[in-house]
Length: 269
Image 1: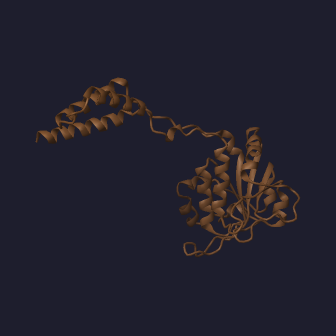
Image 2: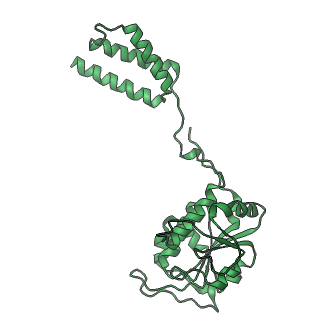
Image 3: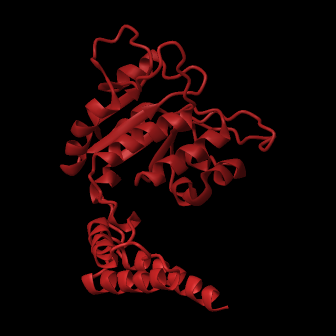
């Protein structure tokens, strides 16, 4: 029997990731991949400011007067791997206010407290509130800043929550896609989506299968004269008890019996 994959919660569609002034084409693709891996698909780019890279020598320019005309370069799609569909449905806006217009909760991802009085919270602390809002049908946003400069004071002030990823105070350096992955993972982990489809199907061996295997073992032991000066009845009771406690799978029994048969055949040869 093949275990079916669980359905993703519909309310995850109410959570969007917003990347502002992103400069590296690869980071956009990698962020999309990180999102889709954790069940999120709504990506918004605010005024992307792409730099030239070895793969993208002539990056597309962003026109704030015509944001929807912006087209991501091939590099972003290559780094997205199987998440190209996330990029294909990406929304483009000129300002963060436009991207946040219909949201009720917006989290500014920052590693600096700055002069903001809003409490600084970790993803684990904030995610329950975000999921509750999403379940109510509200739109929630996770806002990530430029790779070099992060979010500006104005961008942080446009949000109503401050989120930070806690780490080594002596060395903390996550790139943009890694930060997106950490936050998206925390969101997905708190949806309690089951992992049954990843687990091997349980086919526990029956009492009769274990007994048949033990008898097969006993036959082989006799063939190699293992019971000389040993109490065969007592020893085989212990073997039956041992394998009974071990809760072997049907496949385990098949492997052992195949091994016993091979040894027997070699003894005959």
